[in-house]
Length: 353
View (cartoon, rainbow, N blue to C red):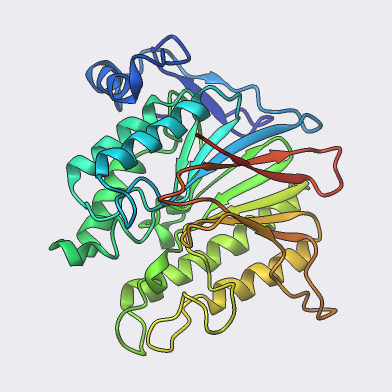
C-alpha cells in the first residue's frame, strides 16, 4: 500500500478504518489484535491515505522506544506473564500522544514460528501510532537453537514486517527503504524517515556478535549486510547534512560492544562491531549537531556519552547513547525532541507498574 508523499513534508500518514483511537482497557490487546486481524490487517485499510501534519520544525514531539520483549527468562514464571507485562506497556504507549513508536528488536525469546511473527505484527498494527521495527538476533540469528534455519527466518521477517514502503500501526508514515537502491535490494528492513527537523534511521545490526559466525572469518551474510549497514549510515548522514537537519537518531538492536574491548559483544575473540562504532563516531563528529544512538540488547536502561572525540581524545559530546529496558524489566524509553533545547534530545523512562 503506497500513499502520496508531500515533498514539503517528507512523508505521509495512512488512517486505517478503525476506531476509537484508543482501545478500551477492558478489551485488552488480544481483543484489539483479533479485531484488527478480522477486519483491518495488511491491505484492508479502506480510508484513502492523507498527507501527514508532521511536527513543525520548532515544535517539540516524542517517540516511544522499546525492545528485548516479550520473552520468558529467569525470574519470569510463565510466558503468559511476560506477555501481560508487554501488553501493559503497549496500552501505556497507546494512550500517549507520541509521534511514532519504535521496537528495536528481540520480539521473542525462544519462539521463531510464523504464528509468533504474525502475532507481533498484529500487535504493532493495533497501536494507534506509526510503528517502526528493526530485527533483533532472537528472531533470526539464534533460531537454529530451536531447529530453524536462520536465513529462512530472516526472509520470513522481511515478508511479514517490511512488505511495503510504510510503517506499521493504525496511522502510518511512508519510509524510505535501503532496498530502493538496486545494489541493496535485499535490505528492506533498513529504513529512514523525518519528523520535524530530525532525521531518523534504523540499522539492521544485531546481538550474538551480529551473526559473524563461529570462525575467525566472518560469515557471508555478515559481510554483505555490513557493507549495506555502512552504506546506509553514509547516505543517512549525507542526507541529513543536505537537508540541514537539526539532529540524527540511529536505532538498532545490538549494543555494539560499548562497554570496552572485553565487552559482551565479542565471541571467540572477535568484535564484530568495530566498523559500525568507527562509522558512527566519524559521522557524528563531522555532522556536528546532536546525534543519538538508541539500542537494546543488554536489557539495561542507560543514557551516556561513551564515544571518544577523534579530534580531542575526550568524550564526543554531540553523540548520546541511550539503551532501553529489556525483559524482565518490561518498560519503555521516551525520546523527546526539544528544538528550543541546545541538546535537542531528552530521554526518560516509561515505567509501567
